[in-house]
Amino acid sequence: MSDSLHRVPLHDRHSTLGGRMVPFAGFEMPVQYKGIKDEHLAVRSAAGLFDVSHMGEVEVRGPDAIEAVDALVTNDVRGLVDGQALYTVMCAPDGGIVDDLIVYRIAEDHVFICVNAANRAKDVAFMREYLPKLNATLEDTSENYIQLALQGPKAEALLKPLVEDADLAELKFFRCAWMRVAGVSALVARTGYTGEDGFELYIPDEGGAKVFDALVESYLPDELAMCGLGARDTLRLEARLPLYGQDLSEEINPLEAGLSWVVKLNSGYDFVGKAALEAIKAQGVKRRLRGFQLEGRGVLRPGYAILVDGRPVGELTSGGYAPTLDASIGLGYIDVEHTDVERAEVEIRGRRLPVQVSKKPFYSRPR
Image (cartoon, rainbow, N blue to C red; front, top):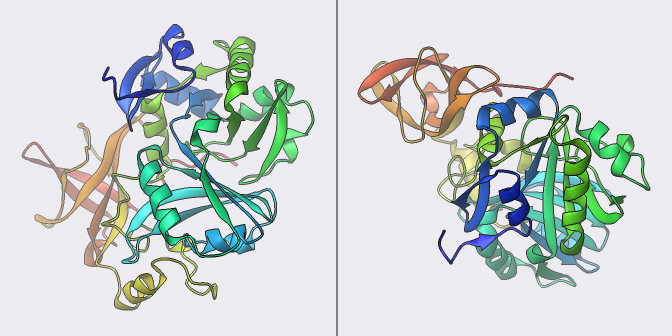
């Protein structure tokens, strides 16, 4: 591995557990352990543990912290209550997506933000440039945390015995709270990137190994699977969760990406990119993100052309095998005049193969 790659704090533990390490977003990360398909299906049926410590954390503090963050992102941070989270995007002045984020309101004077790993330096620079001159300070605290994601229908049952001072069942979806987990104070959030129920744990660096070891020693391998980046990608793709750098970028705006629901143009508050998004909405978008499922054999990959009536009308941005469906699926942008078609074709190595087109997730967990 290149000397320029960073190692997550639990690197040696992943190697001991059989993690196959690969470069990702400037880090050496486990891509798989026993195999992507097995790890994927374990999360769908039971639970999987991911180390996502490569993700970045930014904290905004001060009497005007809520208002300051509201000026940076498109969603309504002022509408949150303490212990509530929201998904949002941060846009450039022209409306392009700088990053997609999870924002947690910890308190009236404290906002905690999770940013994508590859975008950390860019995001922090952007936030510092556009942070309004209010009584609020911004700090990149990424080096202070180990982030673990425990995902799957059995996640609550596995984590609950390790929580000492709270009732985990009371923590609702997109809520967070500080709890003692295996004797360590951690921010526990009922959020994730798999389409399943589960938790993301932001653990102060000095306690991360203790929490990780407690989970592994209690449940691995009978009830819990170690999972890598490969399964994380197939899980998010089935749930139609976009990936920055593929499905989202500064050349893509949230209205065409199907993220209008996180853009609050009528909130009464200004944010970076609002004027541009208002203009885009008035003019109408030229393309939209859609899901595609291959009807036969083959594998959809980013960059493949999408065709309707033999004419190129778009391109796949994500693609791969979906273990839950036993099918190949993808995401891609298609010209707006064709977004209501139910079937199209994708060109794979000179062959045009039929695909089903959908606005919905490929997989939704049972309620």
